[in-house]
Amino acid sequence: MGHYKSWSGLKKQLEQFLCEEFRGRITYFLARYHQVHNSYGRAAIRLDGNELVCFSWIEMYQQDADLGLQWRESGAYDEKTLKEKWDREKTYHDLDFLDAALQFSGMSIAQALGSENYIIKIFAVLDGRVGKRKLAEIARRREYAAYPDWVRQFYELRLNALCSHSDRKMTSITEKEQSI
Image (cartoon, rainbow, N blue to C red; front, side, top):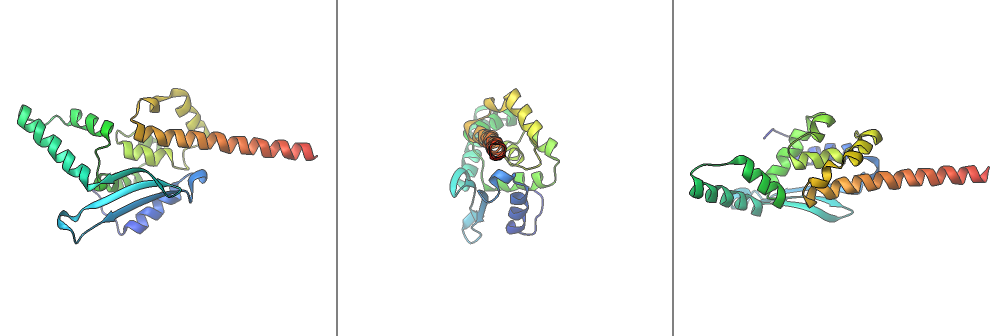
């Protein structure tokens, strides 16, 4: 995991990347409880104060249990199988969220959209640097339809926001034309 100066600085950077429709509405949350044994933590992505997805220390224990079970059953780790399971079940913890945020902050938007990491994909699809043509391509290709629900919701939010924003612009133009 990369280094960062402060969570507030990284959070500010991530929120500045947000598209216009979600600026001030999407917030990123991370808390690390350093005084608690093992420094438990929790991270979340919120829309209008409601948590859409949460990453907590509990998932870290689930990852460890999955690794231990696989080791006992086969004597080896199959990272691909575990990653597929963790992706499907959202078995990611606060440090996975933080690592994804740090990676995303140093990537191009094209790299982020093509990332294997679903958390990075979420940051990318909410990013204002993803333009209308790229969003139209994402909507047309519908690759996101195969993503787990917890990821797909962010694609659908962004695509719906784009449609709503376009509808508002069209309504505004029509109203101006009618007043002339």
